[in-house]
Length: 153
Image (cartoon, rainbow, N blue to C red; front, side):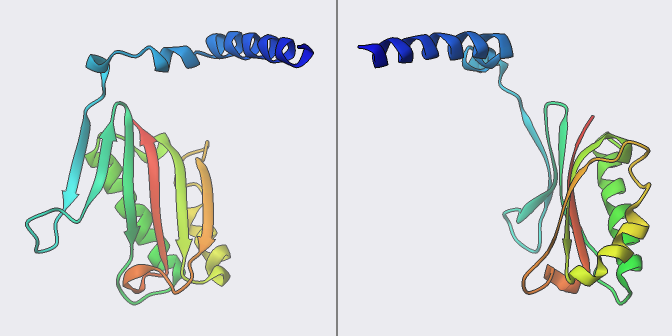
């Protein structure tokens, strides 16, 4: 009996915390308030798009991974990738200053320092959160680095 009383008390506590945190708002959302997804498709000689270069949902922009597919070092590739991200963001109505999250995929973790030298300062004075990993088997297309990001409009 004591156990049931504790559970009931905990349930009431979590329910009130959820209400304060606004979790109930999501559960009570009406279907007609659903957000419309807008995509910028990339098609490679197919009738059906392979993937979207960017997707917008509400005030968020999700940019697909950008790589550098030419001869060069990590600094050349990083500069190119960041410029491609910037173009995609601007096309979607956002900017580098509005990026919230970046994923960086390196062909070789030894390129981390060189990538950082070019990356630093490219997102304004309030840089986004970032995850950097070295990929097993390399980045597709022989790029030394690939990056994707999430931004707001």
